[in-house]
Length: 405
Length: 135
Image (cartoon, rainbow over all chains, first blue to last red; front, side):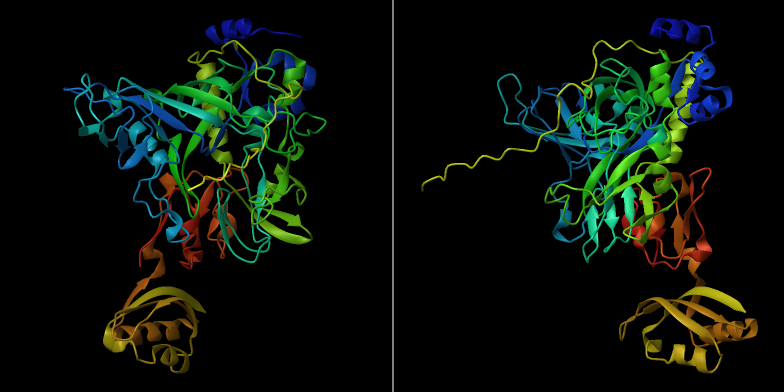
C-alpha cells in the first residue's frame, strides 16, 4: 500500500479523505486491524501547545513622514525592546525580551509579568501597541525619534518566525537540592517534591513521525491558530540521540523552525507566559498533518504514551552544570497519571505542555482538512534524520588573551 | 459538625483582643489559622478555618461581628479565570489541598473553591495568571 500526497489532496478536494487524530488512530487500528486501518486512513493530525522560547515575529511598520531608520537604532513595543539590526522599518520582537526596567531576578524570584511573548499576544489580539524608536539620523532618513501606536492590521508584514519549536520529546525536571528552585520547567520543590514534564506525548507532531519521513521544508502546518510552514530544522536539532525500538528518541531530539502570517493567527493559540524566577516566553500551538503514504509511516503514528520514555533530570545541579547522566527513565502514561515513583518516593507530576489543548489542535486541523480548507504540501527538502550525523554540540570555550592595560 | 473558612478584617484597636482564645474557650471551636497579617496599630487580616457544632460556629461568628470584625467567606477573595487556563496541569502538583485537579478523561484542570486555603503557591506557578487572590 502506498499513496502520494497528490492523491491524498485529491481526496481532500472531493471531501473523501479519511482524517483522524494521533489519539484516535490508536483506537482505530485496534478496532480494524493494522492493515485495514493503514489502507483507510489518509491523514493523521497531531498537536502540541506549550511554551517555546525560541519564537518571535518580524514586523514592517511602514515608513513615517519624514523617514526614520530604526535599523541600527532602538525600537520598543509596549516598552519591550525589539531587535533593530535590520533595514529601516523592519524589527523583530523575540518572545523572551523584557522591558529595560523590569527588575528581573534582582528581587528573587522575579515575576516577569510582561515580555515579548505578551507583546505578540497583544498584537495578534488586535490591540494597539505603543511603539517608540530612536535613530541617529541620516541624509535620507533624517528623523531621530518616533512614538506612535501601531496595530497589526496596519502593518505591512507581521510574520511569526520561530527558530526552534516543536521539541521531539523533552526532559522531566526534578530538584534534588534542599531549596525551591525556579526554572524554565517551573517551580521545583526540594528533595524530589514534584516532577514537571513537557510533551504532548502520543499527540506530539515529531513523536508521530520520529524519523521525519513526511515532515520537511515546506510542510504546511497549523501554527498559532493560522496556517504556517516548516522552513528548516530547528536550532539544537539533535536527531542522533538513542532511540527505542519503535524509533522514539529517549531524550530531547528533533526540532523545527516554523513561520507563518501572524495576521491570520489567534490569541487562543499564541499566549504570553511568565515563569516565576525564569522569564517571559510565548506558548505556541502547532499541529502537523502526517500523510499516510505507506504502512511504515502509519505504524509510527500508532505510538502511545506508554511507548514514549524520557529522562529524569536534576535541575538543581546536573542540568545547570551540564553533568551527564539521568536519574532514570519514565514514560508519559505514568507521567500523565499524576504520580511517578523515583527512588521509592511517590512524586506528583505536572505538565507544562497542555494535553487538552494539543487534542483540540489535532481536532481543529482534522476539521480543516475534512472540510477541504487545508491541503497537504509536498516538502521540498528533508530534515536531517537519525543517520545524518547532525548533532547539538556544547560550546567550545576558548580562552581569550588577557588584555594589557 | 460545621466547617467554615473565613477572612477576618479587624481595625487596629482590636489587634490585641484575645479573639482566637475566646473562640476556642468560650465557643468550643477548633481553629486553624491559614494566613495572618497582623501588626500592632495597623489593620489586621486573618484567614482561618473554624470547625465545631453548627450552633457554636454561628455563635462564634456572631461574637466576632459584635466586637467589630468584618467577616467574609474565603471563597469570595479567590478568582480562577477559567478562560485564561490552558489546562497544562502545571499547578496541580503544587496545590497542597487538591483544590486544583485534572480530570483523567478530558485532561481539563478544574478548581474547587471550597478546598482552597489561599496559600498562593499556584499564583506564583501559573504562567498565565489564571488564579487571582485579593487580600
